[in-house]
Length: 233
Image 1 (tube, rainbow, N blue to C red):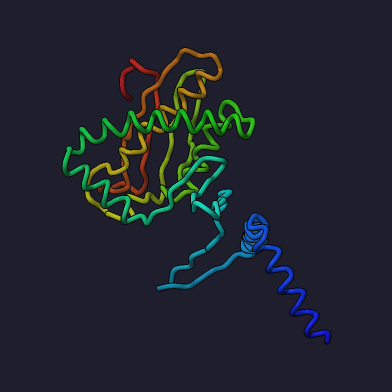
Image 2 (cartoon, rainbow, N blue to C red):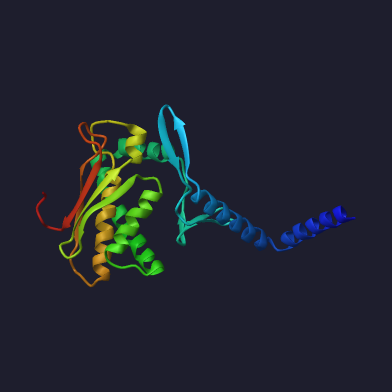
């Protein structure tokens, strides 16, 4: 009888969740959070070809809508796609337009997107100033584009220097002898300018990639941001 009672209890719980589909999603999300916490509490090391790889769970707050399948992070809709898929599409457009023209288009699009992202994130998390920029670099790093390291930033001067390690483009394409990550360049100026505007500053900036790990003799990528209408270097 005890076994029957347990089965009946399980059936009752399942039928309750069917009647209340929202409960299924809440339970699913709670289990995901528990598993994420557990994975974050354990460092897993694998040995492959004499290389130690330390794995970790994503540090991004990821939610997936059970009905629509839409992914969100910090209340912003996201797309989750394979790296090769994205870069193959990127290269196809580059081939059609030419790298220089495509870089110009992506600079302005990236600038606009970075401004929007920083504005929304600053509001959501109550951030301001350099904290917004560092949060942006951290989120970019956590999303697999590469590891963005802020080496220097001066909001009053409108300057910053960012080092890029583990570039997704370089991992996919290797040493090709040219700067591959021009898609990122507008992000730095867009982020800087949004932060400056939020502080009431009229100073605006321009960003440039100065080197890529895809170039011979370079192990990392570098980006610099400076005030608009100032000479390079």
